[in-house]
Image 1 (cartoon, helix red, strand yellow):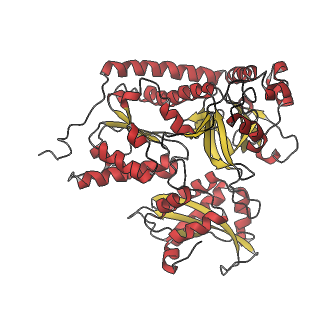
Image 2 (image 1 turned 30 degrees about the vertical axis):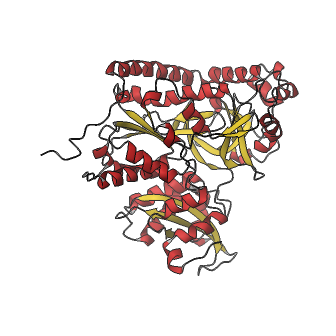
Length: 537
């Protein structure tokens, strides 16, 4: 006898199968174009830079920096210094009042309110021009089309894609609109995708993210959902809502795949996908759902994406309107640091990424640390403002993630989310200026906790030592760093902390590196904090 799930009729898309076949052909052509760009990366990047500089030659910034005489990359380096948001903010503030011919010739209507802040602590409002929007649309298509070509799937368009993004409402400020880059791109989707893209406008506009996820699960439970797009760390929250709604309706659902049997791809980004994969596989009830990971930023859009080769890192997109440079981390504090173009990066060296964009940012340091595990394959390593460094060990975001992965493999468990902080303590754990110690704050999946927290902490320590040479040297014999501690979070603590810290902002991510303020707030969500009724202002 069939279960009540198997007898449901799912609502399908309006497109016939023939459209899917055309999409597969287009995907193969798009991948071939991307691959050609990688084969000729220097020429492709020089072309992107020339186009940006030529477009801005008569602007105030372009005239001040001699854009009219820039012929080669070396000319650009001589004329344009590296700058951050604070260097560009005087131009941006004038652009927000409607001035044109400053960084780009056109008036800029949209400004993306980035989830980060400037080095001076100011919120960042980044210009997003129509030229950048066009590049971003093509790059977004590239990331999906590579999966379509790899999987040979000609039936994805026979169902629906659910998008988990911020509300599409925009704040009017004089002649400009303030939004987030993901929300803006939802409003500028290609015509082909609109009939199959969920949710509908009333849910898109919802600002409370918990309510939005619940509404999506309730309304689209019986729709043929074949893809989900958004920030990776929010997928598991949606899936739990889907299971809750299914059970409330009396459906015998032990996994999301039982509810949405044709779900086959997750289009993620914003954070590294690897820490979330075990939880996603458990909720999905299978491990063959593909995850397309992307590296993106408001400054320029999508920089790189998964290519399913199995190699570390994501494949760069050199042909979608952003020019890339990289400053070696060990030279960054110099007055004139080396600037390395994409075609000359060195394997496994840590860099600060610098971009020049179609929206008028030139030699702009975005604040990310990256490395290249192999040529043209990039991986995010951390934030300039976010390393743990008690003894100059510079432990990055990625070091923490890999150390947790090492510990989870050695002492089997599943983590929902985690972050690490560092303090100076004495051997008895009291505040002191004697030696440093890391503390890992982690929520474990219910029923999948490690058999021994002590063993997990020891394995986490081993993982850090594998990843970071200076950490390893300073841990030997407790010479400068003590063994790390592990503080488990209460059930649901990771989500509750994230909600409190970000106000439910879909762009918010659980911080892998915890500063003192965030650590103090997070303590209330630990088991110890609840037991001791820690009061946090």
